[in-house]
Length: 202
Image 1 (tube, rainbow, N blue to C red):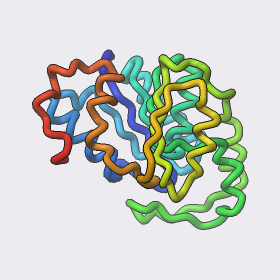
Image 2 (tube, one colour):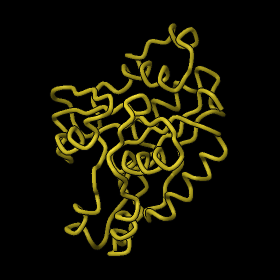
Image 3 (cartoon, rainbow, N blue to C red):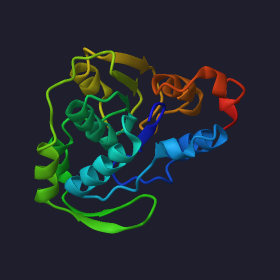
Image 4 (tube, one colour):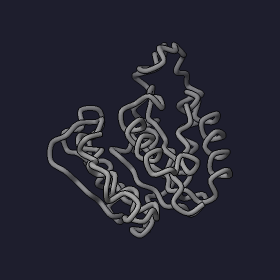
């Protein structure tokens, strides 16, 4: 479906996150809710990838929009299916960072408690792909003030792609709403549909 978007949230996040909520609001305003999926992902990578594969099959050839760990998932799926991907402060090789996080985790939005095990880490490692080389299919939005991930890792890994690096900001990505027109355009949604929307008011 042309103009469809699959939003992939990050680690211990949920569809209730600010970025996901703002995107849902805009797609509703445009009358395009049926062209958006924002799945509540299972904490286990294999389960999550299964959910995302299902959403891709429903949407056809969506733009994959991945935040943080969702950016890692989006990269794997974009390479597997030849899809376009827009990555927001994406995690690079997250399995290398998780050794210190093994044990009980809590979802920031749902309060669900779960155990991060070595099997999670192994499953994440299995999703790793070579660095993408196609700048036409990727946009990578980074903010240097990201307190969770070192933006330079993504800058290096995605160096062949279209990078948009902003000074400051944070891991949640400040000013996301104002950047939504660029996302909609990348997804193939015509500017005539959304030019009347005040994105700064979201």
